[in-house]
Length: 284
Image (cartoon, rainbow, N blue to C red; front, side):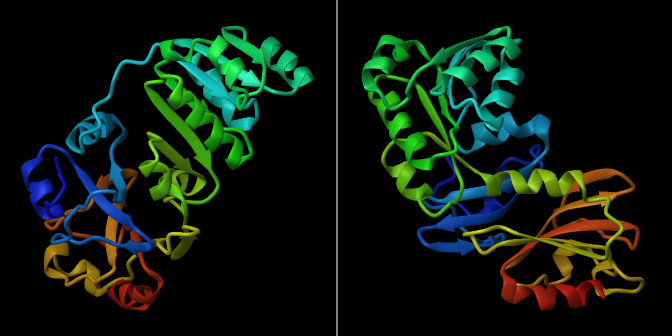
């Protein structure tokens, strides 16, 4: 629904949805979008949106949320255990762990999860588990190759949705092209952590997004700085950078052209490295 349309046009058409696009992976390039940036097929987009509006955002980009009742998780490590724990109260969860002792331990900890001792890359094991009945297959072992192979097998066996965890974003476009539905990188979790800790007293906090060149920078404007003198749409913000969110006395909002920043705000900026000095001047 958004392919070939500019960010400005999409935001204008969805006025009730407060969101911003803060990064796009396009092939091997990283783009910090501006209002005239058009979305293209196979773009990997990073959005800022309120938690309660995530479903609306997904619908906007053609990824409507579907009801999930049955999932299988591959990998009983930190991520797999945490996901199973969060889901087991509401849906049917099967957790696959290759190590027998670890599987037994998980079975005692997760009393509403069916823990299976098995190999997620063994197609016969997967076939016996009737994967075509699953809504989602989530591969989150510590081995990227295992996650990729297992998810491809699951897709072949009829799973509606596959999700895998990877450590880098380098191969995400290729993974999407071969049919994997959701690819989650550790980098994609970084923004949530920044928003949690945006109340930092430090003047400048920088978080680097490995492999996609974008840095997330937390600024506190100095008194009289240029950024506090006009609405954002009139500032002339540097190319290759964008303001994502603003914390005003504990209230976090998504930035837009009419937003006015004060000295009391904490501002989250997304930028390519070369543009950072220009951004700093606006806050000093």
